[in-house]
Image (cartoon, rainbow, N blue to C red; front, side):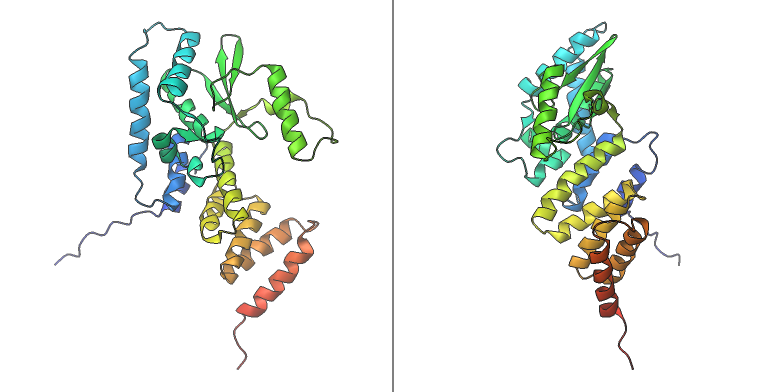
Amino acid sequence: MSEPLRLNVPTALEYFSSLVAEDAGLNLLEAAAAIAQDEFPALDVEAVLSEVETLALRLSQRLPADASAKHKLQALSRFFHHELGFAGNVNNYYERGNSFIHHVLATRRGIPVTLAVIFLELAGHLGLRAQGLAFPGHFLIKVKMGNGEVVLDPCTGNSLSRERLDEYLQVFRDSAGLAGAVALPIDFFMQAAAPRDILVRMLRNLKEIYRAGEDWPRQLPVQQRLVVLLPGDAAERRDRGLALEALGQWPAAIEDLAFYVEQAPQAADGQDLQRRLMQMRQRSAPPRQ
């Protein structure tokens, strides 16, 4: 009698890893939606993709076949912000649900980067050349229009002038304590963000929420995904090691923290981490007979 067929269902992290394995063909919306599977294991990512595709079809059917890029962008902005009611969650900006695409679709509230992910997907269905901008402190969208481009705030749909962008940048510099530092030109921040960079920004938002609340069980899966996205980033390995240490998973924590110390020998926190490594090695050592 033959053995029953066993299907190996990938874990949430394995599924995410497969989505981001290569930059070419990386589906931003799918990978962004999959982030929520750590908290919602039963989440149907395909249903999320289908929901956004339905919205795109609903809008595209209203547009004439020869609609200009300007006409498409105006229609998309009205549809997204006014008809559907997508906006920034100004009343609860640090709610973790703002970082989950399916939650943003349900509530119509989010943070700039998650709103941008949905907007970019809709724009792509309409044939618009839209890209994300990893602007400091406030994720933005730019849309190529003929020989120029329009920069939009994904929370409001408002077009942003160069002067307004300068104001955004100054607010960020002041809040980050960089008022006296050498100012980089604004064009430095106007480069399109790759899908991998957008996912990193989403995950780092969640990471800061969990780290501020010392919610290590939730932070660890976020760190796992960041390490998958940025395998050579020593700081992300360090932060995963610190989460593992807080959860008492010392052998794995030792591996990550030792990697960081080796890769960044001159780091300001190097001595502290060396001390913590010694303590964990002592704790995890087998007792002497």
